[in-house]
Image (cartoon, rainbow, N blue to C red; front, side, top):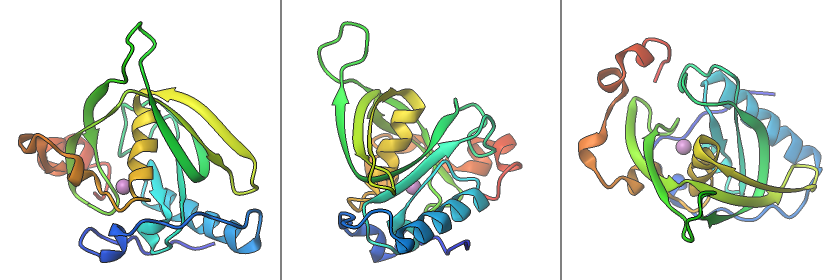
Length: 186
Ligand code: NI
């Protein structure tokens, strides 16, 4: 168990496409997951992708307690270990026939000190496996869907600033959310 160094934007390793995990329930995989959890919790993150610690595998973890100081208003998301994920956008549960995008604030442990408004699909289905090889299949919306899309973007070399459309809503956390900044290092 160890807190690992989180790579920062500008590091070319964050721009790679990650490889699928081929061996489940191995000691090496459990150690990696354990290190990622330690690293995410030490940074008060809502999620972490393996490429952020320099491991080029399709593995993300995410989840928030009732009160995460980086996202104090966000609803809790169950702590999840997700390997080889596939995301399918879905129409919202309101009679729409097409998936819709919603805009909300995001940060990233690889982009410390900054926040931006980023478009994401409101509703998604995501599938994959946990570290034991057991299948995961969930349909989610809102903040949960946003976190999954953000983390899975790391597996295709995308950081949230690459998704920003309105750069008038991209800035420093301590300026945009001074009360939030006091509660976090970021
Ligand atoms: Ni991130």
